[in-house]
Length: 131
Image (tube, rainbow, N blue to C red; front, top):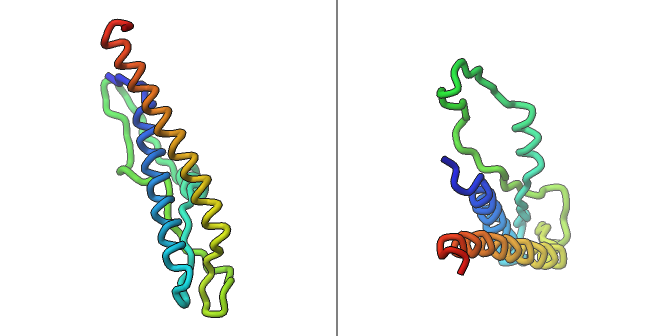
């Protein structure tokens, strides 16, 4: 039985994505003056495209059979940016870009937290009988 119809799980995965992205951005900012440091970024599109092209389906002969799923994979990956250089020391961290992405990610994360809080508040209202 799926109590939350997948919403809580999706919000959880989105929060995990936002956390990893925040850690990656923070690492880039912390290494802004490190010689030859290459900035990293969290990508989702490449992983999604790969999954769409490499899907394996299994035929279920009975409705009670378990669905075929490959192992739990993260819906994102961390890649290194190698195609740019902003500093004379080989470092390619653009602090303005990183700070803008950090602000955008913080807004995204907070909206996810607000949404999951709303879900739990709705459940709490139902459990209390509408009070």
